[in-house]
Length: 487
Image 1 (cartoon, helix red, strand yellow):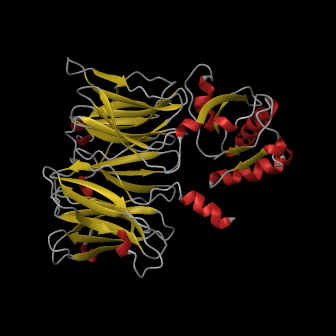
Image 2: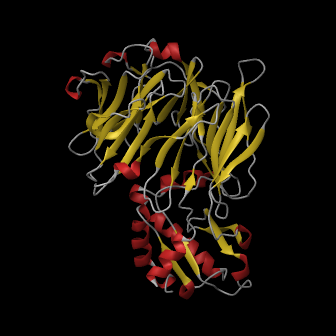
Image 3: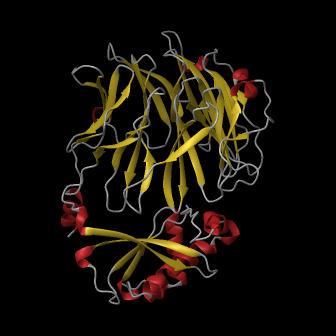
């Protein structure tokens, strides 16, 4: 039976596959997989002709002879002549950084003992990386000069996070103008930015806004401003604001942030992705992820947004690879409980959408399946949405209980801004943590009770599952209501 189950699961996996190549400089880059091999192969081809494939990194070869191999990041240098990658061979989540010369194929270990994340500087002469303390907390940012004589012992420490409640990470803006350090706890954050047009130095980092207990924010660069998504000023679902770059670098950290759009408590702002002629705003509304394409109106001052329509009533969106700041097309991913992951491209000039690829799922016929949403009621009256997916030809007539597997995670919310559910559900997760964690458990139980009461299933037909944070959920609900899950 175990072998049969393994073969069944494997029959739905396309082992030999390739991601949609993405343009970057004079090349298109992509990863691919081969049947029987466990790891990805990182490749590129010339962008404007039919040149041969060049393998940048074959992780299968990298893993040969190793008991463990986890590649953290793979990044090509700004001049496309080098590729850097971080790898952990010890299963300790501590990585070393290697640089490969794409002309000679020579490989050099340049950094040991980092957290796996790194960024190139303005050119191929500098790498930035983050190291950890004894508790594996990412807390120091360093710069490493790439030269024949450089060594890690001469690297410069640019930033140290002393507060043990905070950990830091780095990212480079898509404009390639700034390196940002984001340091945060679970409820508070702070961002420092470095102008990469200047030599890296510890005193070159400017704090966008000093940390304030309970205030979260992140920063992106767009034209002469920083776009900031934040919950400051009681914007519990986050809002999008801007501040001029020169104001920040004049060290006016307390300067007024200007709203890009009026705060709407029914919309959860998750973040932005900036390009020269537009920025993409990701958020959530009506219980679903949403994507708005935003650009200047004809007056060159007012920002207008266009919400993209999706083909199904229930779905989820995600980011994709968009390397080029001057691009007028935006790639994202789309999927639902019945639609495999699609890579989609939206043209901001023609306002057309193209499906570039749908992840192959062998031996799957989506027409056989149906997805719908039903609502349960929590003990305090809050409406809780439940997503149901089933095979249409196997569904029993209404009123006849059938086998049902109820899955719950237990950490993240399903933000609802629709009046049907009430704004209180937008903030439901806030009333289901810390001393009120019990709400997580009783909400899951309410869902199970609703499915039994409506005769979708019965306790003798129902199982449940939760992993990671959902493991706590399962332990609690099975102790609170073992009678609900007796299949």
